[in-house]
Image 1 (spheres, rainbow, N blue to C red):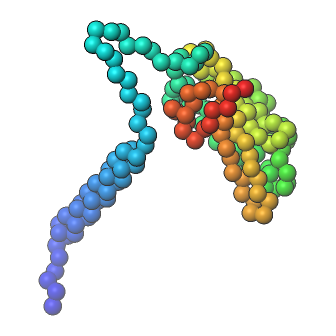
Image 2 (cartoon, helix red, strand yellow):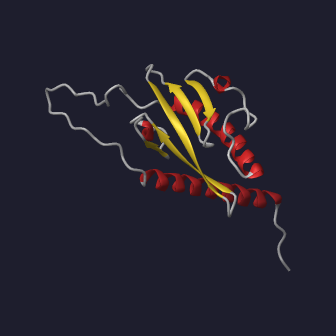
Image 3 (cartoon, rainbow, N blue to C red):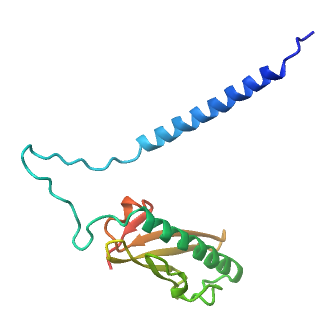
Length: 172
């Protein structure tokens, strides 16, 4: 015969399992973050002033708020372009063909316009928080044998990878 388990014993087991899951997630996050490349460190001689690092015309990376706006626009336009391509077997050549608003219809605080190019690629024009203009382009690589579209990200902002690490710098 097995002894009866009280409901409080079951609750304790549920709390223990839940706690272990949370600890496991925290360990995974720590391990992932520790494998990320570290920001370069700069040492300054005592008694000297630190020198600000910048790329000509771009004093700093775009910033997370700018990147969030870019990513939100990117997502909805990518879905429309992908659906059109997979349904029709060819890329849309403009916003209208993809069932999207005019390019200026996607403007926000930093994004000026989002346009579908004749190749099916997506171009996002941005004015960052410092008033610097740059672009982010999503280039589509359609695989007809599988129907999969691989998207690659390129930007004219030299520091884009600080905030959007899957994007590659590609000067205009």
